Image 1: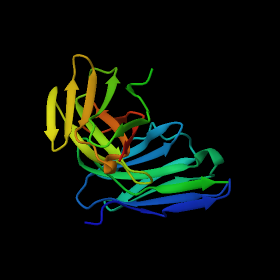
Image 2: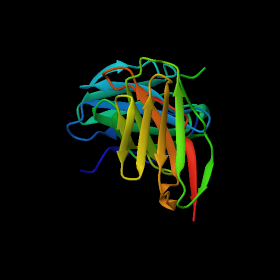
Image 3: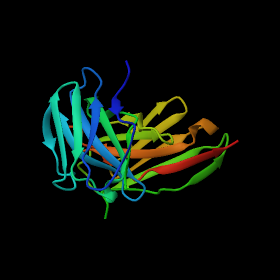
Image 4: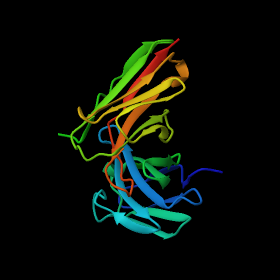
Amino acid sequence: DAGVIQSPRHEVTEMGQEVTLRCKPISGHNSLFWYRQTMMRGLELLIYFNNNVPIDDSGMPEDRFSAKMPNASFSTLKIQPSEPRDSAVYFCASSPRVGDQYFGPGTRLLVL
Amino acid sequence: QKEVEQDPGPLSVPEGAIVSLNCTYSNSAFQYFMWYRQYSRKGPELLMYTYSSGNKEDGRFTAQVDKSSKYISLFIRDSQPSDSATYLCAMTLDSWGKLQFGAGTQVVVTP
C-alpha cells in the first residue's frame, strides 16, 4: 500500500493566489482529516469527513478555506485568496477506526 | 487553558536511558488515548493506542493512562538515537475520531 498521498509536496505562491492541496487516502479508510501544523500553534484540525461527508469544519480558520471530498479516493483543500499567515505544513490523514490515523507526508506551503 | 497540556521540551537523554513523557488533560470525557511519533519533516505516525486506564506495553514502549488523575504517560526503555523525534499525545471523546493533540515533546537521544 502506498499510504496517504498528498500533492504537491511543496508550494510557493504569492499572496492573493489560489492554492489547491490534494489528498488520496488509503483505500478502505472511511474517515479523512485535514490538519495544519506550525511551530506556534502545533497541529490543528481543520476539517474531517466520514464516508465523504463533512462532519466538523469548525477548525477552518476563515471563509477563504474550503474542502471537498467528491469520492472516497480524493479530497482537496483550497485557500482563496492565500495570505502569508497561511504558510504552514498541511497534512491529510485517513483512518479506518477511532484514533488510528495515517498521515500523509504533508504539503509545505509558503505564501509570500 | 488548553484541553491537553504537554511540555514541548526539548528533552535530551543519553543512549540507553529511559525516556519519560507525559500529558495532562482537562476533559474527563476523553475515552481513547494515543501517542504519535513525528520525525523531522515527516507526518505523525501512530505509536501506541489505549482505551482504558492502566498500562500497555509494546516492545520498548509502555503507555500508561490514569483517568482519575487525567494523566497519560509514555516510557521508552533502552532509548536509541533513532528514537529522536517529536512525540505527540492525542485523545478523543467521540466516535468520529476527532483527535485533540498535545503540543508535542521533542526528544533527543545522544549516542
